[in-house]
Amino acid sequence: MRILSGIQPSGTLHLGNYFGAIQQHVELQETAGGSDRAFYFIANYHSLTTVQNAARVRAFTRDVAIDYLALGLDPEKATFYRQSDVPEVTELMWLLSCVVGKGLLDRATSYKDKIAKGLEASMGLFNYPVLMAADILICRSTLVPVGKDQQQHVEMAQDMAGSFNAAFGREVFVRPEWRFSTGAKVPGLDGEKMSKSYDNTIPIFLPDGMTDKQAWKTYFASIKTDSKGVEDPKDPNDTLMTLYRLLAPAKAEEFGPVYVKGGVGYGELKKRLHDAYSETFGPLREKRRAIAANGAFVEGVLVEGAKRARAVAREVMADARDACGIVTARETHG
Image (cartoon, rainbow, N blue to C red; front, side, top):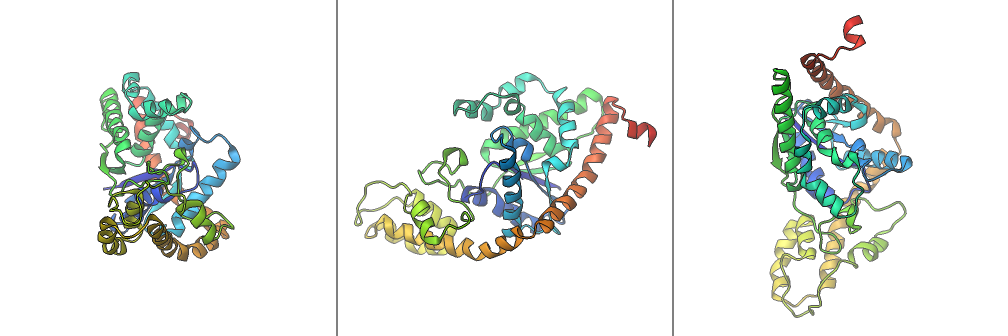
């Protein structure tokens, strides 16, 4: 078994990223069975579909690496790398593009949804599933934890692997299987899914210089609620309680009956939520600052991760090239 997952450096990581993916990634590294079994990458090529500013791409990529290390990713237990440090990924994307039918990509619901939300209909966005398939297949991944919105992309990777194997008469690629992420759907400040696209996020780590008091006012005090009064019964699955259950499960279970019955206002729960957030991530802020100050360490982790990932990727690409008759100078001249 080899687990693979990636995350885009398209903005500051937030609670949706943490509870939807990062928390599970850190937990899986403990059970995967070694760094050759858990592969996590920073999808900086994918981010270019939405972020087209070089300085921001570099900064977001670095911040994702720092955040993961601060949140518990252990480079001795997982292979952690930048997508761009494994050039075989984009080479494989071309080979897969030659066997995938346009009709398959036309049916991508994620592409349609993003276009409907106003994103430019670029070829990069249209070909996103092919690059994602290359990410998965280049590492011979067998298990890909995803949210429901990414299930179709893994199914497309299955189709592309089968199409390539059938076209060239060789079992080059293994079939990857999707598994729904155990992470919860995290609501944002407006009650919709927490997303950078909706500008409704709560960051995992506060921006430099922001105090807890400022965080309270900026994020928690502004969470959207209805007009129910203090004595009114409240919805146990509203935005506030959903976030509280994620940040402080035991306290939320104790507080839940009081909240549902009525007798407390939304302000009380917002304060509890802010306290739980500070207790969960506050102690990690100094660790993150220390990691951020050690650029050589961060880069070293990514370089070592790329070496491990490329060792696998080179083998896969050698098989893929041989299967379809592509010859390179290094193969003919050593």
